[in-house]
Length: 78
Image (tube, rainbow, N blue to C red; front, side, top):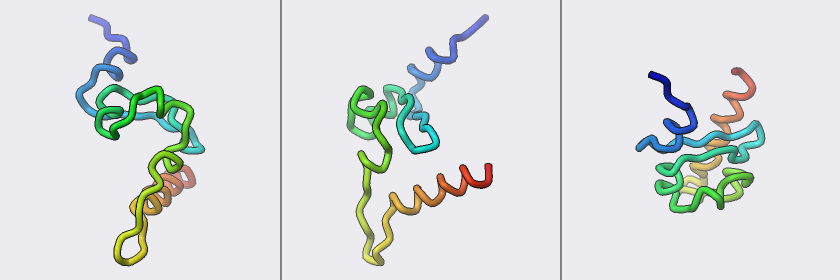
């Protein structure tokens, strides 16, 4: 039995997306689009933090800033 990765990715009930090194959407599945409330076509080619800039909490910290720092650490350290 053989499965095409694209079919599994696209039809998974779990939300998945793929970003490039500049945090630009390369791909997103239906579950992800539903989770973020935007059609897939509105995501592809756009930058994550452009679409979802986040808001600051009562201490002035942004959830988007925390996520960006985490993703940048991953890129820097592998």
